[in-house]
Image 1 (cartoon, helix red, strand yellow):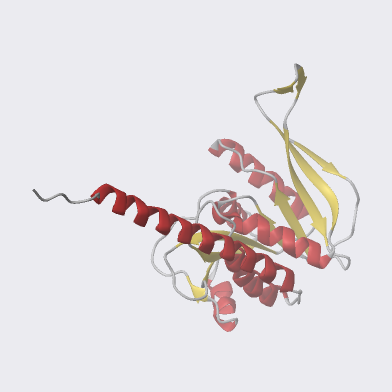
Image 2: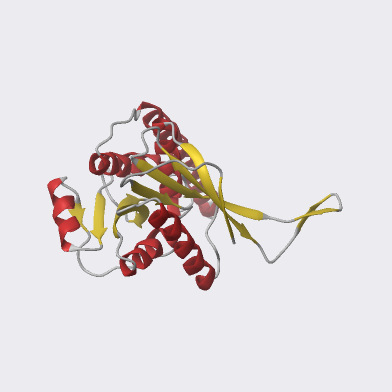
Length: 246
């Protein structure tokens, strides 16, 4: 695992938004959209080497997973966006520690992550918040974000990073967006999470492109469900078959 700095921007006390691929593609999709809207530029990256090789037409290459750090033009926000999550818990913990090394070097005081909350919801998706301390819980309530009550688990780096951050004195918030489908991009949920996140960060972004993409995906899902229902009805009719009386 190698850390490289491409630039040396100066930071006072920025917030960090960190995201890796997960269920419903919610976290990474949201972070990438925010990065583009804020015109954030890369300044560092962590290279994670794999215990395997890949080859194409007989030529060998080494696969590398990149975890990139971006800064907004004013330096108020840092975004860390990873291509993939480690499959081994020990590697995930090591990566979280390296990300926090960068956070400490850049004087980050608070980290935000996002994660999916699988649920058969109706209407618009809700966003729940969990935090590392009571003061942040109060902040979530001020922004009308529902608290994740009861007990639960946030798997992967989108949760683990905040657990490690807490041990190092860095406060953090995880925003959990309701999703219906695990393997389909949940852009409506991404929009809901980004609305909550940008409110906490004190920035405004244009959501129109995300809204249009969400509508297109929902239309494709609706058409597939209709075709599936039509096929099931045909198969049921064919299974019954004609009735003969003699």
